[in-house]
Amino acid sequence: SMLTRVANYKEKQVEQWFTTYKRDLIEDLQNPQVKQSAVTLLTTRIESDDDYQNAYQFLVKHFANQKQNRQDSFLLTQGGIVIFSTDTAQKGQYRPLQNTSTYFTLDEIFTIKPIFYQSSITQKPEITFIVPILDDQERRIGAFATVLNLKNLDEMIREPPEFVPEKESVSSYLVGQLSRVDSALIAPNPNVLRQDPSESSLNEQPVTPTQSQADFVVASPGINAVLQGQQGTFSYLDHRKEPVLGAYRWLPNHQLGLMVEIDQFLVFRDARNRSRWIFLVGLALNLPLALLLVTVFKPGRSAPSPRN
Image 1 (cartoon, helix red, strand yellow):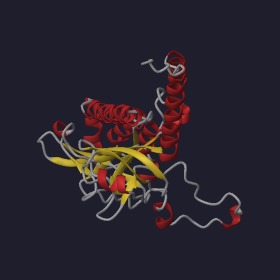
Image 2: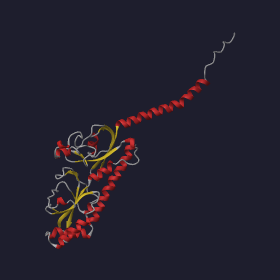
Image 3: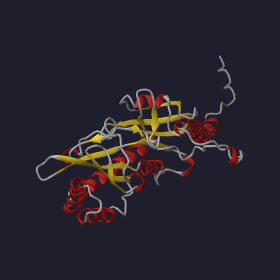
Image 4: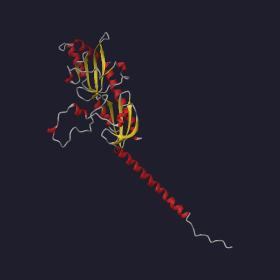
């Protein structure tokens, strides 16, 4: 079916996106200059030192062209203080990463299961990968972290494949388990307006965590099923309370659920149109046959009774 084709295509896209992200991360962390610069910052700690400044400027230049699949890259001390970041506003900040980040050594990068969580800084869903930085004696002196660009991943998954006819209106998106009670879109839904356009911008309230949370915390029978590790196809009300036919599947390598849905009205309309077409074709084929049968086997006059 169309939903299955789209689901297969989107699953491959997710796999390729994460694979590219991980290969880029390996390339950076295996770059001798990147590693040496990180070690210099983590061991020198004196910003006015020439070696510190040279190392810092190298990292700024190296990470200037931030990869599309990364939202931010940064270097942390053992105490969780950011000493380098592609987001300069983060420098000097404390990053509480203990329970939410996906912490692993580089050889585990293709087997590690990402942790999906709500950032205490942005209030949005995030996945953060952290790799320890070791000194010459193999002692851990800090960590290199990257925040995945889930908005970039979300936009790619929402983009309809070229093989889907425009009238089909198939939608696809990713969801994750944000907490024990909340399931969420991986990025705030771009199709949801934060405020009624008819309202004056002067009345716009400051965005609070609760308000922004409404943009991505979602629930539906399909989402509930996929986050329990299930996969299948059935009819249900989606997170907008609209009737859809959905195909969903759990992606265990990434701890995310893939949803592919189509409006039930379109499905049943197409089914009705197909039935009507089959009926008319059948009628067109059978009508001449019926006329032929009537003509050939038309009953004649009754034969006269035999005389005695």
